[in-house]
Image (tube, rainbow, N blue to C red; front, side, top):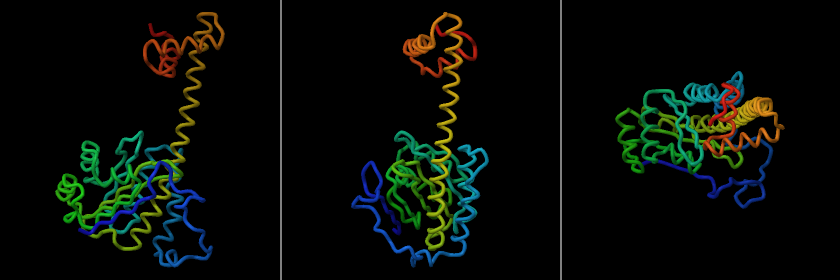
Length: 263
């Protein structure tokens, strides 16, 4: 079996400067590793920065752009999938190619597989030859059936947030062993994590504004109908929410949309 994995230090947080795991400061001159990067990897920096700035920054289009760039830029990559890790759950999001949907569904059902490990444990999982892989027997059997010869799964994280993983698929063994392929994939995963974090932050802000507006509209209806203050109207929303076991914003949306108060 030829397979590799590398992990970040264990624990809830990721290494920060000042911790024993923090990287030591290095000379600002170009390192030997960077000097060895291919022309493709260098040009990837510019392409990534532009491609992942999707208009309106919606999540779906950002994830699709990540996969399109992976297939177009990473040597040996013929299919790709992107998975999020939300509240301790492995959640497949978008895919390119025929194999990822079935393999993602199996991993979600069993809770085991390289994409699950990369997402949950924030490790890079490199499977050079699927025919000699033994860590996930059920996954391996299906992957071979689907003509997957090798895989590269990279974690997506920023600061202490575990966002998920990016999974690349090749039809032949050792599809990702070339240095340029690994380096380009690492660049892509880093930019993808930053883009994802930015999109998620924007979506949270949009939801917060929309929820505030809905609650404001519902409060206005209750204030006019019952001749009560804004504080009393909000307390009424909370009381209804607790009584019917639904979120305040769901109650507010119902009132703002229909004018009806749940009984």
